[in-house]
Length: 100
Image 1 (cartoon, rainbow, N blue to C red):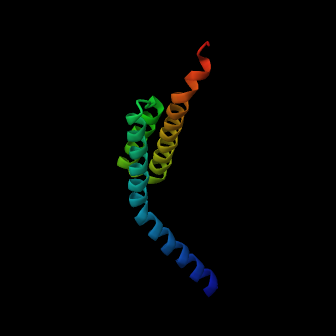
Image 2 (cartoon, one colour):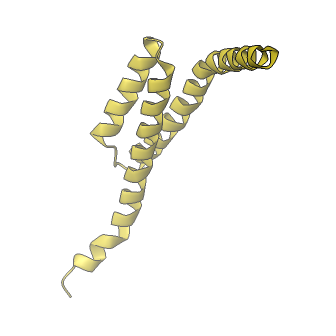
Image 3 (tube, rainbow, N blue to C red):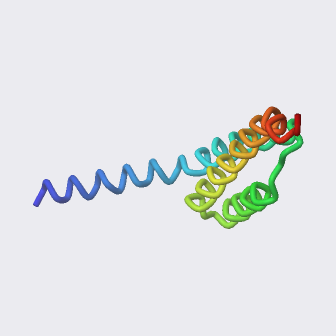
């Protein structure tokens, strides 16, 4: 019985520690997403879905739903990185379409 009680207390303590860090986790994820989006902007290849995911992340964070906010921020970062990869690929891919 004591073992179950100890396990339950440890779960609660661990959960409380994780809940306290979720806002910090969100801020970290948002910063990474914003940085990637700025890099995409420097290449003039920002995507609308990236902006929508960033807005959704900020809205979820404002509502206190940090799990959703972090997921949306990570989605925005992934989209921004994909747009960066697309821009870099297109910098040279156009040459294959030129008639010689």
